[in-house]
Image (tube, rainbow, N blue to C red; front, side, top):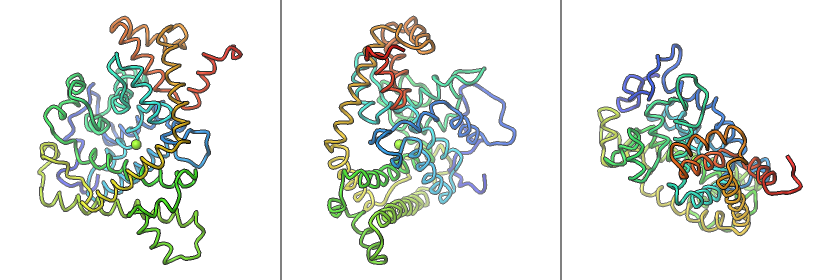
Length: 383
Ligand code: MG
C-alpha cells in the first residue's frame, strides 16, 4: 500500500483473524478478504436482490450487486484521497449488504417480525453471520475467516444485548468506541450511493418527478447549473449529469471536511481513531443538512409511494408465508437447509430452528423467493 496515513488500517496493525492462518504470499490481508467476499455465494446472489424496486421491474434499476460496486467505487476514491486503506475499504463495501433478505427493507421487516420471539432479524448482523458462519467454502473453518477490521466495518450498528453476545466485534458498542476510518467512510459512501441512485431510479420509474425535486436544495442547485450550461440537453441526460454531480459534490465535501477533522485531531494510529469521542469521517454541517433533506424527501415520496407499498406488501406476504411453512415443517426444506435446521434445532431448540429457517429465507434472491413460494403453496406446482 503506497504511503498510508498513520491512522490508516495496516496488515501489521490488524487485530487478525478468528482462526490463525499463514499470511498471503502476493496479496495483503485485506485484499485477501476482498477476494474471499467476491468468491462467496452470498455475493453472487446480490445480483438478484433489490433495495426499493423488485428485480423484474426493469433491467436498468440498481440491484444490490451494482449498489455494492457503486459503494466500493465511491468509498475507494475517498479512501485514496485521505490516504486510508483502499483494500480494506473495498472489502467492507462489497460485503456490507451480504445479509440482506430478498425484497429490500420490506423483506427484512417481515422476517424480523417472524423472528420476534427468537431474537429478531437484522440485516447488518446477518451480513456478519454470512461471513462468520454461513459461507461454507474452506476446509479449516466455517465462514470466510475475515480480518477483525473487515468484520468491524460490516457491523455498522448493533444493540447492546447483541453486542455482548458477539465478543470482539461487539466490544466497541459496549465501550462506545468508533470503528476504524475505513469503516466510517464506507458507511457514508453507502449513503451517498443510495440517496443519489434512488433519485435516478425513482425518476426513471416515474415514482417521483422533477417538479417535486425542485424543493430539494442539493438537486435544484445542480439541476439549474446543468440547465444553465447545457440548455438543450435531453432530460434523461440532464438527470444523469445532475446525479453524477450530486455524488461528486458529496464526495468532495466528505473528503475535505474529514481531512480537516483528521488534521485537527491528529490521531496517532487506528487505536486512537477508535478511542476518539466522535467519528472523524463526516460531512460539513451544510451538506449534512442537505443530505437529510434529500433523505426525508425520498422517504416521503419514494419509499412511501403506493406502488412501492404494493410491492412491499406482496413481498412481506411471501416472506411470512415461506417462514411459516418451513418453521412448521422443516421436512419441506431442501436437504442442505434441512440439515442446518436440524443442527441448530438440536443445540438451540425452537429458536435454533427458527434461526436456520431465517438463514434460508434471508439467503434467497427475489426471484428464488417467488419461485419457492409457488412451489410450496401452489397445488399446481408439483415439483
Ligand atoms: Mg447499502
